[in-house]
Image 1 (cartoon, rainbow, N blue to C red):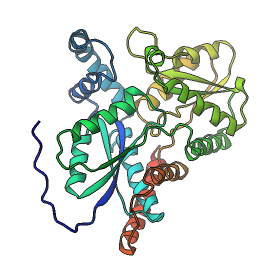
Image 2: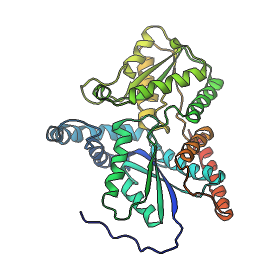
Image 3: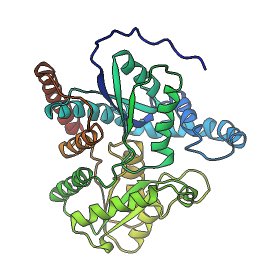
Image 4: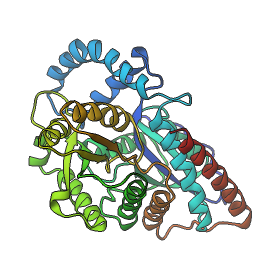
Length: 368
């Protein structure tokens, strides 16, 4: 093992604390040329596709990348904004607001965002934080529910990066927050605010990203954590069991995934006479391809084409104050014991950044 040269060490330098807010990732542009390397990195992760490498290499390079890159690029183009990828925009704004909220709570910490696949990459961000003198790092995934294919993959990438670092920082990781009070309350506020403006549905569908059923059978807790989130939220909303349901979307390949699947469920509900359905995606904290295109476009079409009358998509938490406050609480709980007290000068800077962040969040909300 060869280790990279460390930055020059100056004795007496005050160690800094940083939070890395990690999301899945997004291509740099809605083009086949940009989508192909992103898909290759994503689908080459053994945590994501648990198929023998030699067999999967042939399938990936012979079938998926040549044919799926162009189709995926068209989907990305349908939701791309003038500022870029919605997932990147929301992740960046959430990180900015998180820094401001923590500053108002008296914490002097850096907050950076990174992508597991694509840019800015985890190694790039972790390397910059080290150069900035950050000796304490909290890794905070944008995944409320733990899964091997998302959360564990993020931790793999973090540990892999530090395997080549001589002077490692102190590391902490957030495994999950699927039942965190602040997260559940933020979801509740989001739903009630939407219903106040648009009325209530006949059925609320909570659609989570799917994983292969094999993962559940081998001990992955994701399925259970999704259902716990749904139960807690339904209780807060005062819903009975027949007023909501949990489904799973984004199936890949022919193997059985967690069921019921979202698309056929929406079609079935319409055929059974459900006139209005509201769909939300609690597992995504920011709107992205899977919510804006797969649910709000494709899901809408599935339901209406099958005879449904009204389809409503309830947006993700995005930059809602309740969600950023919950995120700050989660970060605080996991930084407990670290010296993060803020000086008066640093507090002033943080408050200024929080004001700028809120202004940007309002502007983005007005564009939706």
